[in-house]
Length: 564
Image (cartoon, rainbow, N blue to C red; front, side, top):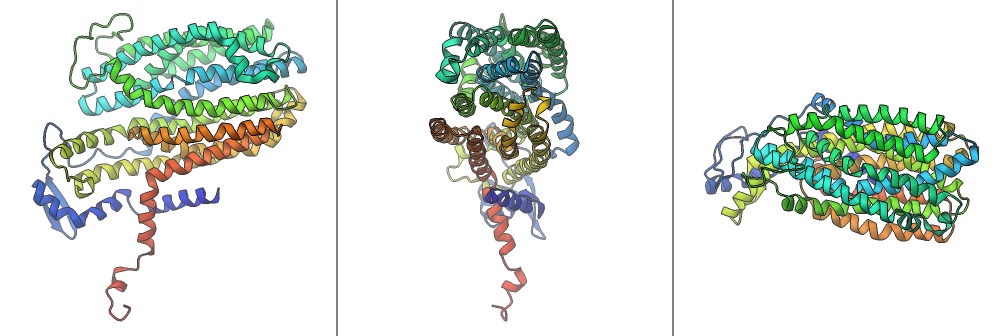
């Protein structure tokens, strides 16, 4: 843990000592004269500062001499705060269900239903999250298309139409699968020990089957919101959130509290809320994302029109498929955690305590995932043009290197500066929100459950909740930057390694019948592993160069013959 804190402290120190761009530009000046001669770059050397007037672009690619102005804190705030509501919406629906079910009925029935709600919500949210790669692809491709081809280009609109059709088809298919195979999959998911408990599997199965009817609209809603976020519009999707939140609360109050329908009532309320939110967003999305107000869900008259840069279903899935590896890695982590917790002694208290901490963590995560979304939205305008430019230059010159191109280093330096600022924001937010929310299981467990035994069971998990939540900041921000850079192979490799290692540790805890706190200790280590590798991939070189600059003697001392 100390190593990670040192790494991030050194990173912030490096950036605070000067613009991140300066490291790369200073390193490139030595080789710049050779590059100018080869590529006809006209520049004036004045006081060791280069003023680039013209850089031949080669081919059809073009790149401005100066990148766009860096986003300000106001820009981040105007985008991130409304976007936060979108990220909170999903976990909020499950948390509302957990609270209504946990506080209704007698204490013993409440604990059992909350225990059933644990694997049910994790399983359903996992099935939904499995298709989050559609949202990631929609944001990245749409933002890149806008940056390269224009805000109202056919290329940008093709992303919207393709994403909407793919999402709806995936949702219909997933609904059919859940209706047919929910019970055996849940039994396998929670293990024989928990499945043998009276009513646990029955309640969980019924909850998932009811909510499965919202899958088509939920996935469609996700990609529409993702495209709006790619357009830096995080306000319009709030229409859907307002509908879903109000309807879900009213529905839970009527169905769970007044009618006493328990999990069945919670599932019905949440399904109605998700239907309403999708219908509410369809109109605004058609007006803002496509000029002819046709999303192409039922009929696609634009299918034969293939403008430059247009995205087809095949190219969309080609980009989205590698992201699926990331999603599977995360799902495997939470799935094996719930599976291990369900197999530990002390049921249903152990599983209920795990569910409370898991739901709380899912509620915390959006406060940090929103910064990842900010990176995926604000960085493509810097990465996409330079990526196209570099590809064009390399096709003309096999010896071309970006570090020899002062214009390219400016663009990459600007992107690095944006990335570093977002990391700093994430660490500050994580420190505050992790400390605040971890106080709930530590001292205020009665807010979530009326069962005093469960209240005592969640207290030891508070410190692991804090560690996992804090480390989510570097994980989420770094992941967003790497997605914007399209370093999908690296991300997939890290998740494959962690997915192979983590389950063995969790299954060993289950085998040894250890406490549920060990499950969450493994999760904190999982977060530490990802944070170190992701951040090191992006900022490791910058930190090393900054440390070398700090340790290097001043120029006047190195040139002083007496000192030498």
